[in-house]
Amino acid sequence: MSGLEQIQKIKSWLEEMDEESIDAFATQNATLVKLVSETFINFRRGIENVKVIMPTESTVVQKIMPAIQLVNAKQDETYLCKPNTDRLIKDVHFSQECGLCWNAEQKVIEGIPTVSGEIQVSFLLEDGSTSLGTLWINPDPRKLWDNIPSNKNERFWKDDSASDEISTNFGKLLAARMRGRSHAHKGICCDDDFTIAFHEKSGVHFIAVADGAGSAEFSRLGSKLAVEAAKEKVLEQLTNNDKYQAISSSFETDKLKGIANGLLFQAVQSAFQAQQTEAEKEHIPLKSLSCTLLIALTLRLENGQWFTACYWVGDGAAVIVDLGSPKVKLLGEVDSGNYSGETVFLTHSEIEAEKLVSRIHTDLQYYPPLLMLMTDGVSDPKFKTDAKLQTIEAWQALWDELKIPLQAENPAKALEQWLDFWSKGEHDDRTLAMFISQDEWNGVVNQRQNDISSEAHQVALLPNKQAQISTEEVAQKSGESEIEDEAERTINITSNGVTTTITLTKVSDQKMDTQGANQ
Image (cartoon, rainbow, N blue to C red; front, side):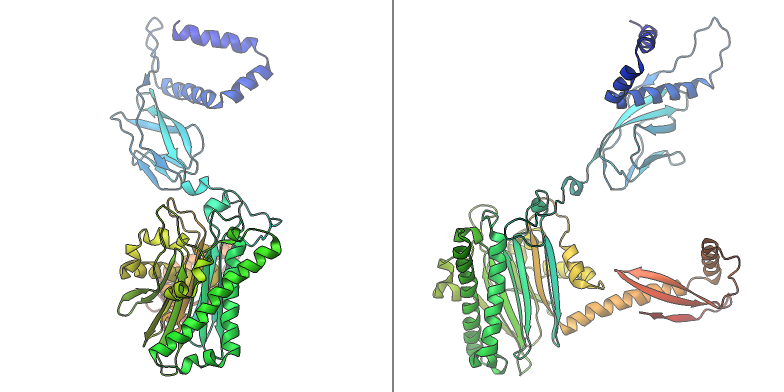
């Protein structure tokens, strides 16, 4: 059957079909109908320039040329593709809105794809013919993950994310946790937890993180019980026990280690005992509360030195980073099992005196530490291997990355949001707790202020003519007819979540006086 006969048959069918049948066909074959429609439209456009000399001559029929090959695109990423053809392309049409367009001047398809999937592309050529192509837009993997809120009626429910911060005379305590995508996709609770505290009388800074075992039904409760019980025990001993109260006035290494061992020994045992008590109370298996546990304390001694002690069971990382030297010191070892994701948890065997004390590591130095504790949801994607945990370059890169959220107006909340970073194949819950010394923290704050001042300075140095044009645009938007004679104007600049108001004074074309930034 010839093409003409096929078209005539389709025309006959359409005449016989009622509206409901036509509507059903169009709905079920929407892409095909749209493509055929575009092909007819392109054909009509093409034959408008075709001159028929004699009625007896054959009518010039538009030919469908071989398909044009296109490079695959990625959703939400810039796309630029020159079609692989020697034929001259006049225009390009897409089967649906997709964020791409045809740049006739550059002869390229460009834009940022807003959808994913298969897009049919029709090319109208300069000779009036049409060529077809298929563009595959790979989906943004982040958009394949649902973010379903956890059920607040769930037993032992807790928020999907959280953060906290404490400022002291010695620096800043910061911590945050974020539910992983693997849990968010199923609407499951976060299993991680953290806590931070400062004991003012002794000057002890305390941080703790815990990662609930994925195989343990109520590990979200177990991690919370562990960090909170450990904190309460340390604060209790620092308040009520003369031996521990004198920690800041102790300078001998052995004596400091003895005090640290006593504090952390009781803290770890309290963490496990809290799980035992709750398991009995709630009539649930103790194993269902399994979690890792990393706790650390740091303080400035009266002689100016800094003492740090840490207990670490399980995976994740506990570290002191010296950005000045630079060097890094791990405060323990990663507990990795024989299989991926396998580790050691806080159990009855782990709280036996000899094994517990063997996991306590201390550090004494003349400079304040940058102390970090993290669960494997952070350490795995950022370091990949246990060996890389010992390289200062990897920690410097992480610190440079962390400076961005820490410079925000609300650094704790910004840190919480930062934990939602994308890393292929790494979708576990994430928790990070830090002690940042005052000098280091001042450096972060000053860098933020310098960035704001620098941006404000650049705006203030705009040529007077450009400033005047911007002023006139503002006037048009606000309905004012004349504001050229105003002595000054203000603009708002937002950088790293901080909005600054800049006042610009109108001066001559040869001279401009900048005004200070109101922070």
